[in-house]
Structures are given as C-alpha cells and as structure tokens.
Amino acid sequence: MEFIRGINNLSDNSSTVAATIGNFDGVHLGHQAILQTLKSVADKAGMLSTIVIFEPQPIEYFAPDSAPSRLTRLREKLQEFRRHNIDRVVCIKFDSNLANLSANEFVKQILIDGLNVKALIIGDDFRFAKNREGNFQTLVNAGAEYGFEVQKMQTFYSSGERVSSTLIREALATGQIINANQMLGRPYRISGRIVHGEKRGRKIGFATANIELKRYQSPVHGIFSGRVFGISDEAMDAVIYVGSRPVYNGERVLLEVHILNFEQDIYGKQIQIEFIEKLRGDANFDTEEEMIKQIHVDIEHAKISLQKNNN
Image (cartoon, rainbow, N blue to C red; front, side, top):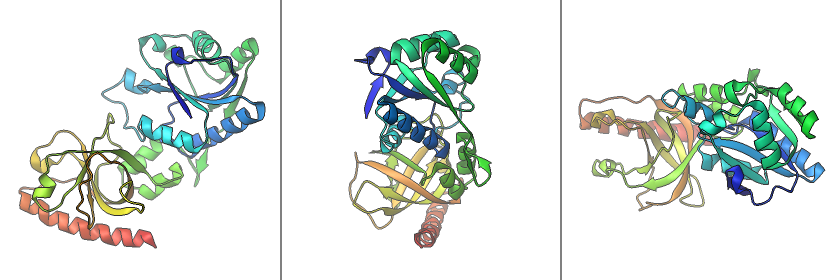
C-alpha cells in the first residue's frame, strides 16, 4: 500500500482512481463496508483503490479543545487499510486553505486535478468543503460535469443500532467493551512504542510498560484486563491503566500496562494493547500504600476476567 502525504506529492496522476473520503476513525464495520465496496469497484474497473483522509481531522482543526477522542491514530488506521488491500492512501493536511475551499473548488482541485477520480464511494452522511456545503447531490452534479460516478453507501447497523465512531466512543467510555468490539468488528486495541516512564511502578513492585498516548484525548479511562501483542509469539495477559495517576498529582493522561508474570526489559518495542473488560474507574488514594493494596485486588480481578474471556 502506498502512503502519500499531500496531493502535491503524487508522483503520477495519470492512473484512474476509485476513491473514498473520510476520517475513518476506528475503521469500524460501516467503514469496512465502504472499503470492501471501494476495492470491488476499483478491481473490476482496473482502477487504483484510494482513500483520502485528513490530518488533523477537521473537528480537531476547528475545535481542538473540544474535539472527541480518537479511536485510532493514523498509524492504526493505515494498519487496517492494509488489511483490506487498499492500493493507496492520500493524507491531506487540513488547514485554512483546505477549510475555505468551496465545494466546486474541492472537487476540481482534489478529486479531478489531484487524483483523477473516476469513481467515488461515500457514506450517507458525507459532507465537505467550506461550511459543509457539499453533499451527495453536489458530487452527483460534479460527476456529470467531470465524468465520474458516485455511489452512496447506506448506514450500517449492528444489533439494531447505527454503527458510528461516536457510538463506539460512548461504549468505550462507559466500559461496554464487548459492545464496542461488535461495532468495530474486532477487539479494540491501542498501539504504541514503549517509552521510559518515571519507574514508580517498578519501585513499588509492579513494573509497567508505558505507552505515549499520541491522541488529543483518550477514549478509555480506568483499569482494564487485557492482552499485549508484539513482545512474544503469543498474547500476554495484562492489567491496563489509563489515567493521570491522581495519587501522584499527575495531569497528563498515560497508558501503563502491567504484564502478568513478566519482568524483561522491553523499552522501544512497538506493541498492541487489547482491552478485554473494564474492572473499575480511575481513583485517587490518600496514600501509596492504599494504592498498592488496590493494585493487588486489580490483578486478581484481571486474572478472573482473562480466564473467563479465554473460554
């Protein structure tokens, strides 16, 4: 899969393209349906299957302080796109120039001159351009003028509910991991590189692997049972903490993983952390000793949860 940052970095736009556009946050079942249709349309017509995404996501540009938490970072999205055998991903910087394009300017500059789009697949709620003035009918009209076809995907439902990134965030935030996983079509994971922390966990007898949360906000908070991938050939049982460590007056949200029955040095490794079940919310403690007692309880609860979910 080819990854290109910016329309201007396309080395060749002579190939015809079947494209889709969106945030694809979470790459959930609804997104996957779009990707499958995109791949099918592209392969049948001998076109390049192309996904257009934006960084930052538009809501993060317009409202950085109130933008919702990301389900997936860019790296995680690309991993999912590869699983669907997409040919090319074009990542466009979302800035004032892009935000102020009219619908017609967006179509001409991005879709026609930039990508040479001949087929476009979009979700049923897709809006684009300045003031979100562009919609499905705008694209149909543009397609008639410039010679490309537009296909609108219908809303995807799971267990009677409309699958959306918003609903998945809500499920994760309230500890409904199973429900979130059903809408994602896979277990929810956060990936990242293990970095050096303050080593407080090691000092109190619970060494943790620390992951930088390169997100505007985290979609999950609290204590979870889970599994870690990327260290050995098999998944490793773990207790996961996502929070600001109030007992130490922390301010920044961190992700720390205590891998059960494991003590090796793994700094620098790229791992994936799978969330199984929420055990409890984050909490403050008057003393470090109280926190240590609770960690023992959390580990026992995590073992029970993991054994239950292995069956």
